[in-house]
Amino acid sequence: MQAEVVVCTRNRPEEMARLLDLLPSQTTRPRLIVVDSSADNRTSELVASFAASGDWPFTTYVRSEPGLTVQRMRGVSELSPGCEIVHFIDDDVALEPEYFAQIERAFTDAAVVGVGGLITNQPPSKRHILNRLFLLDSTREGVVLPSGVNAKVYSAEGDVDVEWLSGCSMSFRRSLFATLSFDTSMVGYSLGEDVDFSFGVGKQGRLVVAGSARLEHLEVGSLSLDRAVLSRDELVRRYIFVRRYRGRGVSLVAFWWSFAGDFVVTAGKSLFYGDRREWRAKLSGLRAGFRTIRAFAREGHAA
Image (cartoon, rainbow, N blue to C red; front, side, top):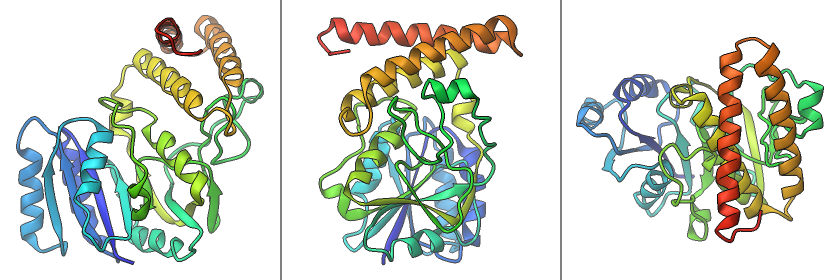
């Protein structure tokens, strides 16, 4: 199967330089497409130097308007006619040498439409009973709960069936893009675009996490976001997701139940637990997210 890899980046030349240094260790080398929306030329110069080095067989640099989903679709438009598998990886990942080879191996099963790698540096959640009660976490990994919350995969022996894939490590059959698209109405960091797209793809075939395709994700982008902004955007994104897919395993009743639980638990933590500033920032974000959702309702969207 012919495969190509799309990397979307913006104003992160240090991360891009690290990725380009690591890529030549891969045992399989798909064509590389870098989709860049940076404000300067540092990334384009890095990619030009990498292409000239001969360390990678085929490299294409593409300028794009900013926005992660816009850039992903710009990358799709650059795929070669013979491409069958498209890999999406973030610029802040460190792939083990067999990553692409193991992802592509999983696609030999004709029922598989999407494959992700196993992120090895994410700590398992503590799975407190209140989080499970309020549909904010699950003992099952890789599922999307009725509230729209997506549970991560922390371990995988072989290929594990899941309901969503992480945006830093997701690969799909190219044929899907004849009828499907990332939601380009999302702007900026496009929080949750991976769950939104991959959950829809999963209705057409199997999604799996390949335990032998291993990587680390440094999460440079999300770690730089303000806690209140992150909480607000996550809540609004999840509401939109549940509205879009309700009746397909998620519901608005479950969403509001999870919101109420998250608000109560966070309020308690903001008074008595750990770094109170962090929890108060999250509480502020939840309030802002609620106001945004109610504004949607006043504009005529059912809430």
